[in-house]
Length: 259
Length: 298
Image (cartoon, rainbow over all chains, first blue to last red; front, side, top):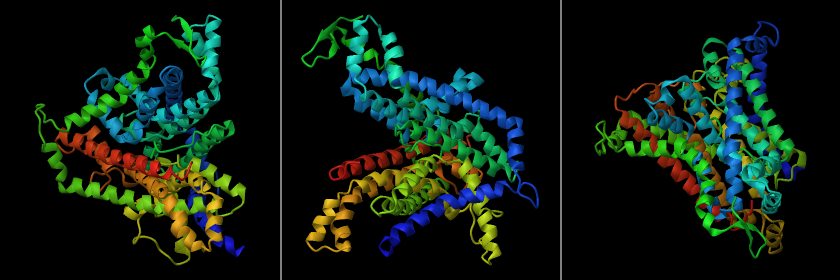
């Protein structure tokens, strides 16, 4: 036992660092009513129409991001493995660029470059920029997940078989490749979902009515509700990561999260 | 559709005359990346060397020398260094404990799962969590007060050290996620070989363990450094986004809504500075990873 003292010690320190803030936040979120513990703060948040609206907005944005990212990444990863394997490091390099260009620099560049165009002058245009940035942020996770998924199936034989039955490229992608990388795609999708739902920087700087900016604003007028939101947000992240681990495709989180 | 031919390996390939069509397959990806990442970033970089009349100038770059910009960069660099080292050491020791430290396997899995969540739990909600913990009314602050220790006013969550504590919360799990496989890549035989030659635990770590792990540890710390340097939301929520004495990312963000510096080119130069620092980080990280791959396959 004594031999294991230091491992246990460091484990305890780490666990405390992780869990004390979570416990404190939960405790704090229950104190909205003086003198008793209650879920009043949660009720206030969930009944707030702005919560529902911003949550729904971010939810839709996350879905759109996932669909577009999948539509770009799956054919690209498929094609690169099938016909252009030499291009793989290049694609990988581009998908990793969001680590070099932080979210705030990305949104700054987009806002500057497309200023005085319909992209920044209209609601729809800004939404396009928002989704475009999120798709870029999702690339590292999506590409890695799909690329690994494609390696575990024999795309050459599948392609050949489909072609011999008269399938065109669209049919091959839609009915052979997509169904086969479905689980890999899901793990990339869940991490993207977690990132988009909590993202603040890009949404706020593009003045979008998203969940992140809503949380930020709530803090200036409420005391206990923000901690309830933090717990809800943690639960949401946890659910997304649990889903990935349950699916069993280890698209582990790296760096491009909403810091 | 292009006709198929059989190659020696039995793979289906398109005949060479379809060459140009082959490249078309990756066009959507490159168009997307060009429109939403490459073109905007390159144009910002180019414009940091142009004045308002689009003539070549170094003024924007030179203006980075203004005291409040320098102090902002220094603040960001210090914050990133402190949290990379602090989070790196704590995360490294935790990764060691759950892998070769010999703790029960379920603890290892629990810590890794939790790290997956915690490394994504950042930004606004993380700031909320720490306000509820170590803010003026925070649970831990109150508890410490009840046993006679008052954190405030000596400490503030909104100060440099307060921010560091919050940042370390997302640094530790990232370190754990990357270092745990590295520790697991250490072969038992190395230790046995060393012990059979009479090495003590100290000898083993000093001459074998640490030298093998060092590139990995340093590389991951560099990654943590970049991770903190690019962070915006957490600091914004905690400091309120005022433009004085603050991290660089907030300074850049403030340039979008209002041109507070009265020189649009300076905003571009600020962004260029960040890209250079992040680029150096990723370059260094890649190089160190390559060094560590000689011994460790993770």
